[in-house]
Image 1 (cartoon, rainbow, N blue to C red):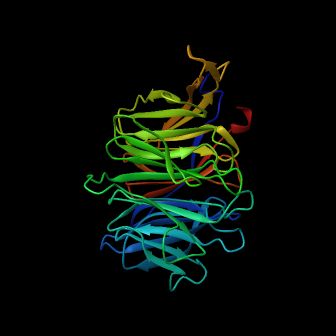
Image 2 (image 1 turned 120 degrees about the horizontal axis):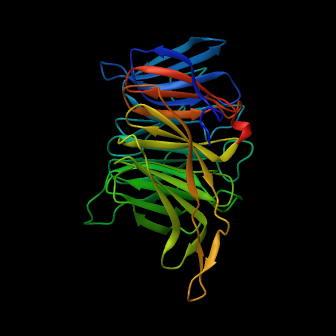
Image 3 (image 1 turned 180 degrees about the vertical axis):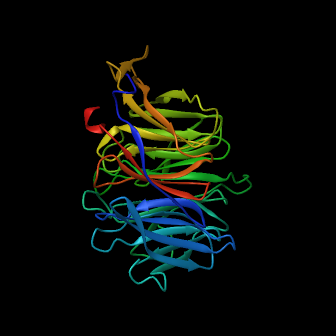
Length: 358
């Protein structure tokens, strides 16, 4: 594709902030977003910004004792819009942004930092219970029901005598009815594990050879279609999750980025699951589109069904920062609108044009 004719990545607003931002999330059904991070004095910061034309207005700013690492609105309904956060001391907290003096939920989820969090079941289009999943440096992956605040409803942690690997990323998926739901987890040694919450078992595990910085399904609320695993050493892998071979597992395709830096994550466009933004460790944004193969399933010599992976095609790219892009969140309401944070202490509102032409 001619990059000049396709979608363009435009920096709409850039705002310098006095904090280190670790995560950014749009408030559902609004023109506001939340920035989570840390002040220089190692205290936690929650900032709510409102988009007003070409201006960014600071709507609210909160300081808490501990730095925030991650957050999600995934387990919250559109009426409540409560924000779930994980912090550097291992606490999982739930906040009402309009009445934020005290957390609605405050539970010790991990022994140290909560590396990542995801939510599911809260939005109108989802299925099942409103749940959160967290992962931490202690190697544990824990699932929480927001209606039951004292203990996790599921826990996957290293066995006795097994060295705990740092779990860097986690994501929900396969939640296509009220019974089925899976959790995908990525670890610092390259392990990727798929946990089935209905059976409580490890459904699949593999190793990608490099630390896993991010994992994400293309959609949470459908039967597993595909998921992406972002790694160190400038590579990411896309797995076709429709067909699992008894011995070979899921088929996959690995893409090596030209930037030569860590891939911090890949975020799928809510309005088109084949389009994703890949976040480069050198400040580059890379827009990719997945192309399915002519035939997604083939039979091996034993007659067992095996999946066939497609290809990832780069649509466009743009360098927006000199530091890693640490977070990216597409607006669920406005196609092509996104907010991202980077370690150059800058928050950017980005517009990606012509996505409806892909």
